[in-house]
Length: 162
Image 1 (cartoon, rainbow, N blue to C red):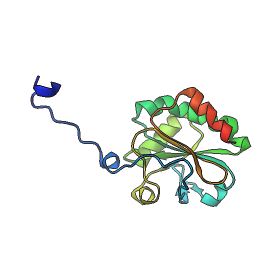
Image 2: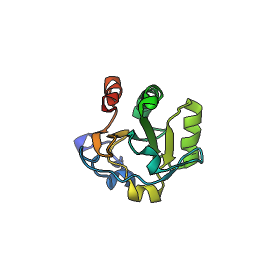
Image 3: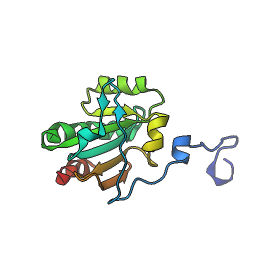
Image 4: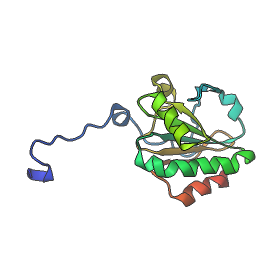
């Protein structure tokens, strides 16, 4: 072993550009501009259709082990509370939209999801970390903003914003 505990010849991993340039999640109380989105299933989602609803923005990836634990809970949250006005919008950072769409189909998740293309990333950049969960209240302001895996009770607690 070399000094510092790194094996001789090993190089430090360089984080992907999306992480090097990422900032913290948006602060509570701020407004987050939502663009109209083309979803992975080919349908469209207009921002106007989300007015007056509690919106959970959920950055995820098919290869993320923490997302693998959190995604079923996020899906259940929407299935339970959508009739009361809660919408989950997944934002996949997979390299290819086809990979993300195949993952959603394989898992049977029902939440809407878009691929974070460069155009979307300019308007709605991914905060640092994964998964990232940002909740917008009915007035469009951020009411919860967390990077990293949430505990099940934290996900269930999102319903308090309804």
